[in-house]
Length: 316
Image 1 (cartoon, rainbow, N blue to C red):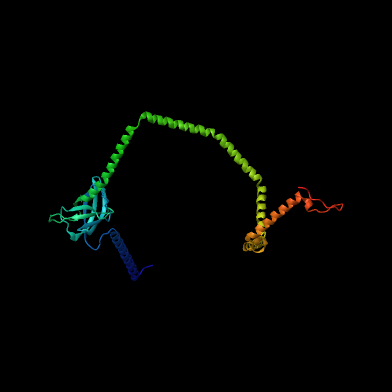
Image 2 (cartoon, rainbow, N blue to C red; image 1 turned 120 degrees about the horizontal axis):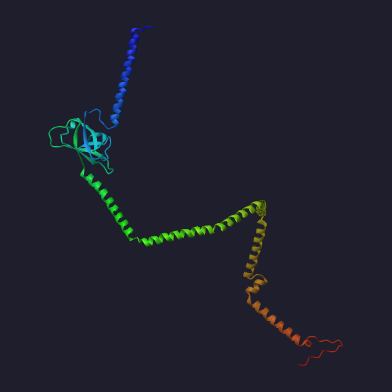
């Protein structure tokens, strides 16, 4: 089957569209990659190199500054035998002179590193892929020294203390200490062996008690049930009538005590009126004297005889 010219033209248009789409996708990919790296794809950039003894915490996308303004970024950190080679780019309009310095600085308290371009007095402009002089900020070196010096002093102090302690230790005393430790270990082992018998017997007794509890489980359950029934019975009993009777008796007793306190009735008068008490006391004394006289001289009071005669008064 033969294709017409129009069909061939349609196939060619589809291929062009696919090609354009692929080109746009590649372009967007390159743009996004460079954008994530911090490069400004809309300006012309020049590439430069600089060497340092180590990376100094520089990373890809670390900023390149000129007079405090970002003019580029680090592209790559390349490890070499003699040190580290840093590849970075800068804007073409900066016009970096030959012999300029690329100094590593710290931009904040978190030790974030950047490259600062310091122009030389040379009038010749460095070209792309030229190598600049790499230097490190003096303050940064001082910070590193400040961090290393205290650590070195602490290490020296630790070594001196260790040496002093080792020199002060008496070998004989150390050997005696080892002997004592060994003896204490042997005593502990002997004590552990002697405790095996009592511990095993205690375990047997515990096992026996557990067995007895298991055997008497039914009786224990009955005791618990009876106690529960007794508690239920006590809770069912009504204590209200008893409490009411007690309250009534207490109220009556309180009324009687109030009457006595007011002087009502015989008991109240006896308590409140002292003269009644004295009269009763005198009457009791008189009765006591009368009974004593009757006991001594009964004929004075019994004046009769079985023969009709009069009983004569006993002579005193």
